[in-house]
Length: 486
Image (cartoon, rainbow, N blue to C red):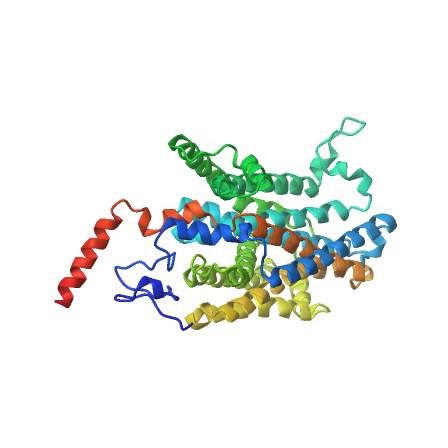
């Protein structure tokens, strides 16, 4: 189907591209739908259908295979010890913490899209916020694996929690691991409540449409007795607003806390105050890239092009462009800080990043995170499905390498050349990393299959039909068109 821009005189039923800008006229965020029931049917048919596209089965089986491999790698790690990883002295942190920081960053965009854009009344969030929130939940689950398995003695993992030992001391508060426990657990809890609260009205819709008893009971249990009464809507909107207000500072604080794991150390390349804002910008950058990566195949596979429109994708690509430029600025300012500090160890750390033994990882990072997003200056690429999908994948690869460069290159060459060593990942390192993607995709595919991917109630609220004066406006426009034709 050819792309037809929105403009005056174009019937809404034929709109495909709604990214055109017309002064005094807002482009529609929901295309080719005139009734609320159209939205309900489009979203619910995925969960209600007995059959899903074959591509879903293929992806699910593949993801389950990767998930099984993750379980095998973790079991082998527990049975043998962390020596199965390629760790050495001084590189005691490598793929494990790299993956942890990467997945926490991925989980940022879901809450940002929902909470901050909701508070700023950005209506374009409604088509993408639901599965972006789900992405947050699943990414944090993936992130939570790595602090638990990297300590080696997993049977004493309770040491990372604020529990006094037999001497009534609290040594955990001296460890950044405890900060991660508080940050990640709080972020996961609030994000889960925010995601679930927003889904209650849609679960009630699935309950009312369900044909089998099992589905009715299942959806009804989680719908919490929702009847759609005025009192229910009032309390729902208040609770949703409060959770959005609570989630907003979490978006800025959680990855700042994660960055403190590095910034509070005395290691060159880590001990810098730029890390908190730098990590937050990078997390938003990678998170939005992952949302685009998931949204593009989801809208194609499940027929959601009229709800997740090119305008939604275009707006996210603009945010990727902005945050990618911020990340590029952070990369350059790090070299300035190292030079301006006058500390020879700091200067060496950054020169070694760019021209040392891990130079290839550094230039992959810069190419993917700084150069690639600049292509989004061109609207043709921002609105090209294949273009944005490939670029978003490249950004995610670059952000993983950013974590790798920060962690491994700084540890491998510290103060004493006699202790330098090169980290080489083993098959267990690589298998655990790949397996974490299997866990993420398995959870996401199950969500797409059995839960409403799009917030139906919120999408309906931004449609013209939700305006009580919509019929008046339509009749006025029709009269004006008739007068012009006469």
